[in-house]
Image (cartoon, helix red, strand yellow):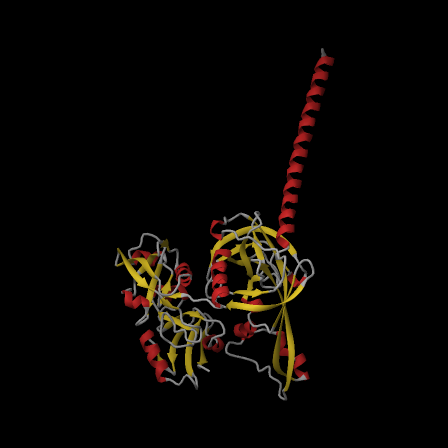
Length: 479
């Protein structure tokens, strides 16, 4: 009897072991098949990804003694933090004019059989010469079709035959947690492939460009990946890799890509017109906090609060008012101020759009005919008509004073500063409070504009600004 029991037990163990082995083999086979499928996707997609090399000729004044300038060990952030207001003079005493070529690397995606390539503005926008290399070794000199600094999207073109091209996906359908693949040329290492997931969607207020709606991913993105594609497991491009969040200059787990739906809209305009025309409302807007929602009769924090309306703007002509909360624009639910800015910007000028808003707790619908967003050189602040300074300010409300720590202060708070503008060059940044202009107190936007107009912007006006680091004087000029 014991022998029979032992025999049965042995047979059962054998069967279980055999089934376990089959299960293990089946699981391993599934992993192998998934790996091979991914490799096939990459092999197919990679043919449409290009290596971009750019050259720009720069004129500079340099003296041999400046090569070991001790100030070069520190960046502007170092001096901002430890020596506010100090700007070391890095210029040599006996400058010599030199001309040299600066080189840069990036990536791009072929998007049609005509040779159009989608990439970043910061890769090719200011280049004198653009060279493109394909995976098969062919090289072409490309021409710039158009560039849009406000979204960091650009299109270049090569003349070639038998060009592979990337199919477009739908970035609106991308889900957080979905697997994605990034392909590019990090640090000049051609056609590098990394994989990760979508970490977040709709990232804005990152401070990279004016129009932000980034896909965030943990797929490794490094310098040289810029302009390359972020693809899904169907082999479709869903984003254009643009930037990374880093404190070291290298990958730290957070990368940003322009959603392909947004990039495709801009790309089509660049190909057709060579530039992008954006819709314009002419309002200063802000997000809605729980306290603001309560005060303005909003049930939730969704929507964009109008902080100011520019005179004779499309918003003013349509009857929009300060304190209105825009909750729908053209039938689309508005999430926050960045969402409204992007939605307006992606709408053609002269379009008549239905806008649903909450005014004093009551809902109403207004039709607005959009204007054309002024060019950067002509852009007037949407919250305050300060001229082409790249500066947007708004009145200091109790909520903003509490948020930024400006209780018991008066002035106007800086809502936005355009990159490479006069305001940016002066050292003005978002969140600073302007308390004086030419040693006269600022109480609101009206007095701020009046004092600016009385001053000489060509010579420069003296501003007293408050930040978390304390007060300091800055010179703002229109030069």
